[in-house]
Image (tube, rainbow, N blue to C red; front, side, top):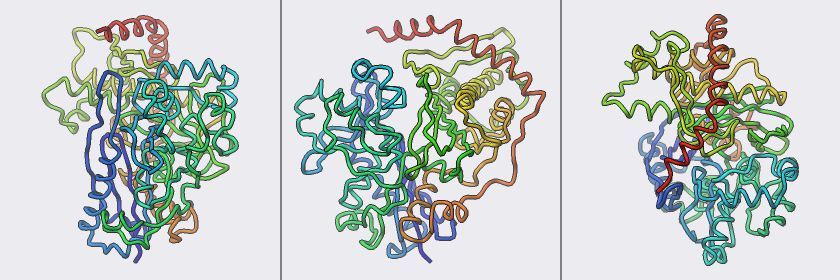
Length: 501
């Protein structure tokens, strides 16, 4: 029996999943960590801590499962997207990685927009230019840390650093590369036009692979540190959104997912790169050339509920779900805008604040909790609506993340989206997707489709929308959008005033 390993590098933890060739998960091991914020708006992480977590969780999952290292045929990676890892000529880390949630590069974002021009941003970048993406972060280093920038000979994404440490070879994949703002989304290569315009050499960017392509084998040093053998294939992997889609079995055009994690995303698979003239969604490359996905992303999904519950002494989620289920759709007139940390789709504005509307003397914690859940679902529904305007549709969606572990929240989503929801049988979709990619790269599965057919399973229920509740939610959804339009300027002014020293 052969085994395959998927490593999921997240913002707050790293998880390693081990499964057998028949798709049975044999163990999951996790290691939590915390990124650094040396000053307001900064988010950095020492990549060596990621590698230490990778080594310890691989050892942990091997011990937990009792699987011998020489039975592990392949290992692959899912990773937090957009972050910038900078390496010198000896492939040593120059400075802490700048993460996707970092906001320091606002000036560089504006400079990029002006330098490229609005039409070229649409034509070349095909995505909103936003802080935390690799290229603006690199430009920030060029301006503010010129001595560090002079040392840069290689740049890569967070999960690619782990792959480099595992194999000794530096590479990336199309999905992660396409989320750097330095990539030609249509042609699947580093963009000569973008990089020449901003004055960054193409030579510092790594070669690109398909997600399921073997990028090498475990090197001697990594073998000593992880316990894996040198016969284990190291497979390219991909950005977390692509790997979650694989782990959910959503790999064909017309399939879609809705994820409520810390942040939230709706993702539509496509056989074409969808151009959004408003630049309020993201279109990235899929797990191989000729595949794309379009994603609407919100900043504060599960984070909104976590924040709200942190205001109270107790947070028993079983009790919370039971209370929420008793509240009528619309939360007795309470509406929540989940813009606690700005918003991406559709507003593309980091300077927004959240808001409760409609609170009265009869409002209690259950109403406000349900309003938070509904507000997050309204925000994702707006993403679905925008993707629909781009010609992207789905008859059903696969729900994942924390929002899929709450039955009231699942029903709220189905009723608001007016789309049936399926739920994958594992909570570790990104790690499962990485393991499937490892199986393809190691020759266990013929392709991603066969890997999904073998390993992806769904819970034995489908959450169907209720037409009457959807009618109620349509009214509240319009109020939700009207509230933003009426309050936008005030929310931005309040946010900026609150950031004053």
